[in-house]
Amino acid sequence: MNGGSLGQRGSYGSLLCDGKSSNNARKPSKMLPVSSREKERVFLGITRCLGRRRVAMLLLVSLALLVFIWGSLTVTKETTSPTFRPTDSIHFDSIDIVSHRSTVCRYRVNSTLGHPCDKFSPPPPPPSGGRRIGPRPCPVCYISAAQARASIPCSSSASPVLHNLTYFIDENPVKTESHGGSDFGGYPSLKQRNDSFDIRESMTVHCGFVKGNRPGFKTGFDIDEADLMKLKDSHEVIVASAIFGNYDIIQQPQNVSEAARKNVPFYMFIDEETEMYFKNSSFLDSNMRIGLWRIIVVRNIPYTDARRNGKVPKLLLHRLLPNVRYSIWIDGKLQLVVDPYQVLERFLWKQNASFAISRHYRRFDVFEEAEANKAAGKYDNSSIDYQIEFYKKEGLSPYSKDKLPITSDVPEGCVIIREHIPITNLFSCLWFNEVDRFTARDQLSFSSVRDKMMAKVDWSINMFLDCERRNFVIQAYHKDLLDPNATSSCSRCSTAPTFAS
Image (cartoon, rainbow, N blue to C red):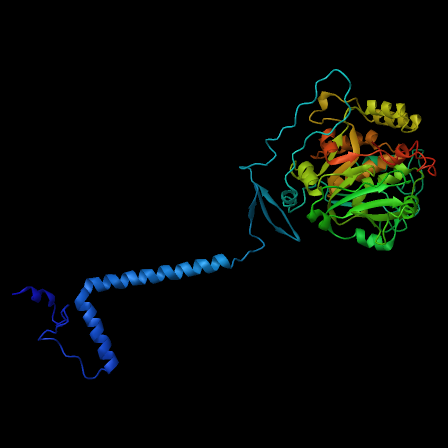
C-alpha cells in the first residue's frame, strides 16, 4: 500500500486530490444534460478534495456570513431613514418632553436628575449698617430660552374646587348701597361680594364688562372690532402692558428669543390720549405696532382716574384674551429684559404655581403700606382709612411670623405672572372688584382677597423676592419725572399714577 491510497474514499470513487481518476469511479448518468454533468463533476471534485465535513462547515460559514451582511444592511437603512412619531419622548436636559400642538411641552420632570437650577443659591444680602442701600436686582438662575419653551406643561394646572366660572351681565346696573363701585363693575352688593368668596364648583361673579355680551364691545373699555378679533386668537403665552393718560414712555423688551418673537404676542393697551401722542411723535407705524408691541387702542374708558383704567387690562386679562394659557403683565414703565419663556419657567412652571407676584422690597404689612401711601400722597387719605377699617372689621391683622409660610401681605404689583385657569381667574376678578369698590391701590386689597380664598381651597400664590423681579424687568421713571412738560395736558397725572408701584 502506498501513500496515494489515502486519497481514495467511499463507494462513490471520488476524484483524487492530484486530479487522477480512480479505476472504479462511477460513470455519470447519460440522462443528465451536459451542464448538469459538469456541475456534478465540479461539486464531486470539491467534495473529494475537502471532504464532506469541511464542505458542510464551509456552507455553514457562508450562510452565517450572508445573514450578517443582510442584518448590517437593514440596520444601516433604519439609521439613515428614521421615523419620528409625535408621541416619542425626548430627553432634554433632565426634562422629558413630547410634541404638543405647534410646540413642545413638559411631559414629566425627571426627579432623579433634578433641575439645572436646583443647586443655585443667590449671594447673601449686603451687611447692615452704613448708608442705606435701595432696592437692587439679585442674580436669578434661568435655563436657556429653548429649554424653558420645552418646559411648557402639556396640561393645565388643577383648579381646586372651582371648575366653571361665568360672569354677571347687567345692561342697567344700579347702585343700591352707599359703598363705591362703578357702572363698569356692576355695583355688586356686599352680600354678592361675600358670596363670591364661598368657592364652589360652578360660580357666577362680577368681573367688569357687565354691560355687554362680550368684553370690549359696548361695555366701556371698548376696543375696535379688528383688535377684538385679534385678541380672540389662541396663544400659549402673551405679554401685556398698558399706558393710560400718556403717563409712561413705552419700553422695548430686550433679550427676547426668536421663538418668543415668533410665537408670543406683546400687547400694549393705550387710551386715545396716548394714541395721539404716539401718532404725533411718529412712533406708531401703519400696522399699529411700536417695535415688538402691538398697540390696542381703548375707547370709552370707564374711569376718569388713569390708575383705575390701568387695572382693567392688568387684572382682567383673562376676559380680554379668553384663549390664552399664560400671561405676563408688566406695568408701562417697565422694560422686560429676560425672555418670556424663561420668566414663566422660573416663577410658575418650576414652582408648580399658577399665580406669581413679587413681594414688596421692604414692607410686609398692609397697615404699614397704607400709612406709606398716605405719606406719599398716593391717594385720598380718608379713602385709604375707610378701606383699612373695613378690612379690620373683617379680621385683617398686622403681618407676623404666625402667617408663615405666607411671607408677605404686600405685593409689588407691577408684575403679575399667571396661568389662566378658573381659580386664578376668580382671584383676579375678586381683586379687581376690591379695586373698583375701594381705592385703586391694589396692594391694600391683595392679601384680603388671597386669604379669604386660601381659607376655602388648597391654593396659594408664589410671592417671590422683589430683587428677583428687578432681575427681569428694569424700572424706568414716569414721564412727568423725566419731562414735566410732556404730560401738562394730563392734570391728574402728577397725583394719580397709572399703576401701583
